[in-house]
Length: 301
Ligand code: OGA
Ligand code: MN
Image (cartoon, rainbow, N blue to C red; front, side, top):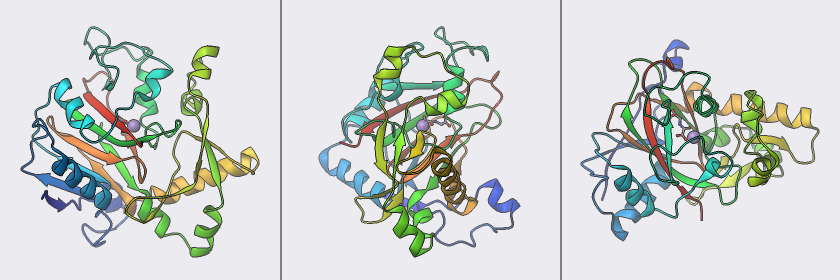
């Protein structure tokens, strides 16, 4: 029902390390580009099923040339599941877009001007540059995130996606088996505190208590997937040091160029990813340039 072509764009890193363009036939099969689809149109149950099926197969879907108002983006997202609020339960720097369920992924202040680097919300932009799975710090966590580009900077500011199913499957069987026994705690403030953003009061710290997830989760499509990223703060039944080192090692493995797709944004792009089986991160850009995206997210419920 959906017209999809797999995307095989290598990351810049992949070409630098000599993994030639397209040599790895399946490496980017977790990303599909959808053609001839208008995400502003109402989504019926059949279409929602078709998107679910495609997401189960791919993990990331790219729709180009879209034109979405905030309400249309939320309507599209709502057709795919209940909406997530995520970190806004801890901190609401401002609500420029006027919807609790639409995340303002921009470097703009409440007036719509480029925010100064010291502005409180810029730390959120930078936290998004750490590999993560949206809302993995809560239960239910996020299922699909839908990020829509309005204004993109002339350089940088790409978003990268890493395939956690392929990464898990590439591990030796013995390591896969031992990882299946482990669980990690995910904490909403872990990455913020790492970045030096520590000004949260007791109520904010209590707003989203840490939650525990298996390190390996089974995806509805039947494949297993690593579940890690910047919110994972410790591994249960391990010392802090040993657990954090394990998390860092797994992240390094799972974000090798062979597992990563880099999306270079054009205004009008809508990208959907499955947070259960991918990690993502934003890339650096000149913070004095305008970058304006909007994200709607569904709960894995
Ligand atoms: C997000 C996110 C990264 C980016 O919207 O969830 O992590 O490139 N964005 O802005
Ligand atoms: Mn994110």
